Length: 260
Image 1 (cartoon, rainbow, N blue to C red):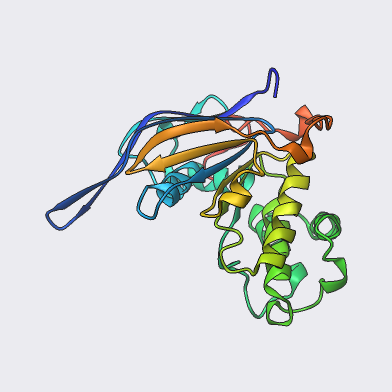
Image 2: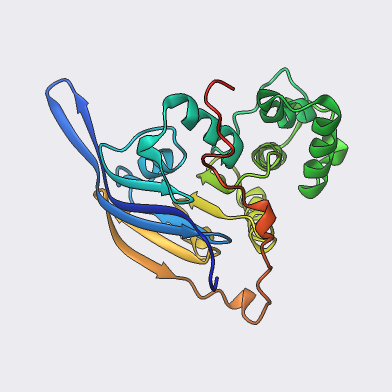
């Protein structure tokens, strides 16, 4: 996107795991930027560093070295409590295995991130209703996860990720446990969300889905070997959806108050 705000800026990032006397370099000198309204897929063979990179972007793990900024804020300067607040308020997660709570209804699962934020019940209910409508799951609001198909469960997971209006949506193999029909449906939903202005970074092993994104980043042996702009003929000529600047929250220091 032209003149887009840079949300994620990673420079020379490395990650080393130590297990006993063994040292494993999972990431080696990664450079990556993700701008507002972008849709990036990360591909590569198993063990190439895809999930490690996504975990670091999502503040579920820390890099060993290098620089990582979210909206011009250095992550390395944040405390653990501040990182937790960023995760809850600014990043939405979609996982391969859905991670829904089995004894909670669809609405309750989607509402949970808002409860953690301390948002009052009336506003929570309104936001949940809006996001369930957005993913076409309103009629299943009072069902339990085991009463849904895999594709429906993943739509609920998408709704839960979106309910807090995150700056960035992270998806780790979101179609990995789905058949092709449900996988296609979830990927269509993600494409529609991106057209509406949602910024997405997704790990996928499926090249069909990778090329639905605007860019594909290929990792091999912990290094970026290509960063390619995708040409999607299905979307050629379509007008790029405008992103509402007010929907992109500044992370620091105004939104994060230590001890709150």
